[in-house]
Image (cartoon, rainbow, N blue to C red; front, side, top):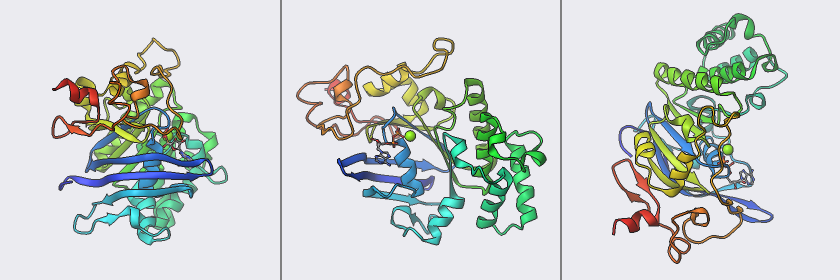
Length: 335
Ligand SMILES: Nc1ncnc2c1ncn2[C@@H]1O[C@H](COP(=O)(O)OP(=O)(O)O)[C@@H](O)[C@H]1O
Ligand SMILES: [Mg+2]
């Protein structure tokens, strides 16, 4: 952590206490989000990406427990906020959720109320978190809808979300998320349900907005290709652990972990796969309750070393100031 750090996630573990047993959704992850930067979190389904986002926003389900670790917010470095320690009803937490850190979800339909117009929801949110009058908030809502590329914003502001197309709805959600001028926007698979052309437009929009609003983005996706142009730092997650992290250049040009290498191979190529679906990495992901020693990827890893990878957890090794990998094969290769 240094003066650039805005958010610090340190040794975070989150367990679900379920009737079937304890599910370790996140198991000791650490990463930082710098000011004005984009962190990509990538990994297959079930890696713990959404739970990480929920922990930062403190919107975890009741069955979840923060077992270890810290989430520290350094907007004012002299007064860091320990998000993990804030009481549920704390006004500071209310301000974090409603203003400082906002979230864009995969399914915008679920984020909008079907009972209220888009404008109504934006105005409510703005009035709750800023001193704006109703008229000012309405003007701001219209201005934000225009900024995200929604035509006819004066008319759209009085429409319901179901009256918009998928791409327009996603734009409207970005407008809502950015209207309070947050420092961090967490986007959880925000383009997954959109077609490729609209995906590209939404990504460009987010980048443009980042430059304009001076915000940091945590961009969550199962598809490494999506964040190639977008992310400064990338965290590669698998079954609740960070396998590799590095700058986008390090992850794309010098990947070391076999899991990262497989994810790179699985990036859909334009034209090769009409629906843009990710080609699966071979092997089955172990069930969430399977107790597995050693490296979590070892059951599917083409380079797994018997008697080592299946027994002992590899340490995180630093290859550069920004590049870290947790892999026995990588360590052994250097011997
Ligand atoms: N509400 C919940 N109750 C029980 N288990 C959950 C819940 N949410 C997530 N999990 C489990 O936590 C793990 C991580 O899930 P998640 O963060 O949603 O993965 P990702 O977003 O990477 O697909 C998975 O094993 C998932 O089944
Ligand atoms: Mg998810």
